[in-house]
Length: 191
Image (tube, rainbow, N blue to C red; front, side, top):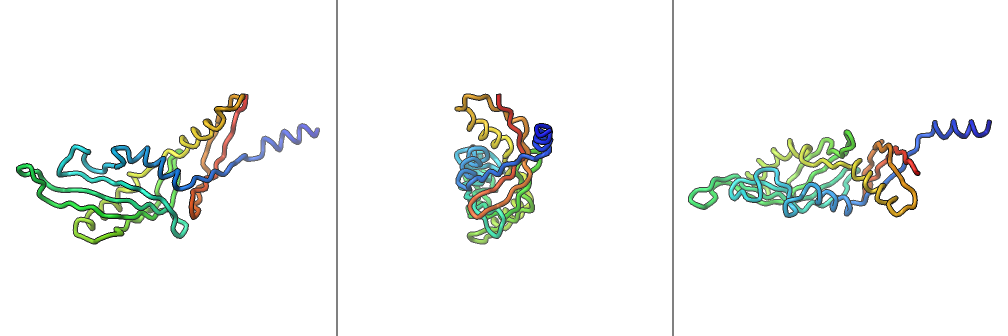
């Protein structure tokens, strides 16, 4: 009877863990996945584009008022190549994104991001600000469930037991002053 009660409790209990991901690790992971072209994330053009390109670089993560703060640098040109010279607009400036977070299908998403230029205000920076405001949510996505699955699997690699992660669902994400706190519902199979 005691065994049956214990078995019933074990099957009814929701097993969850909390994983705290510090911002320096998040910066490193996002830089490796999103800022892949010499530490840059091209949002227009390619590294070979001379006169018509735009990229984000040097991302730094923190929190402000319970939201994720991403500070980065924008560099871009919207010009034409005329006789080997770029004629048109171009600029480089610092900006910041302040956003809540959500997840969908294991991917970390920016929820209602606001973008602000944190350096000089120019005509070009205002035009870029409009474009970033509408597109930044799609530009920054992080496959957090898959990365957590890799992290948990790597931790068990040195174990004499085979550990399989059969379930890994993100229940919630909280933004702490120096980290993300991820509440995960998981199931491990140990053989």
